[in-house]
Length: 128
Image 1: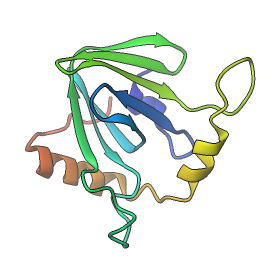
Image 2: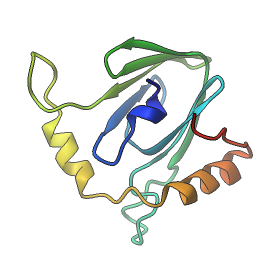
Image 3: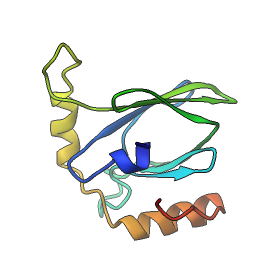
Image 4: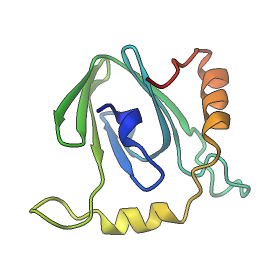
């Protein structure tokens, strides 16, 4: 499974970037080498709720490191992606973060695709 396949409307991912810190993609797209995503709040009507730079790209080989976890060795350093989980089985409890993200709309996936392509001047591959 890839990050794009894992990200469903009821599934939340966390991307930890060595320069940008923790990010939460509303929509994520697999690239041949890397991922592109748009953060929650990008489609919000209120300018204060929208992140100032919601569109991101990381290039590098995406490697699965465990159940719902990936890493990318990028030119900026190691980027990790993980599926947020509720408590259970000794894993981290991400309930507080998930409850906050539920309040933000994800926005339309096709519009998110268009915004990413326009902003980054790339063509995203179709989902496999």
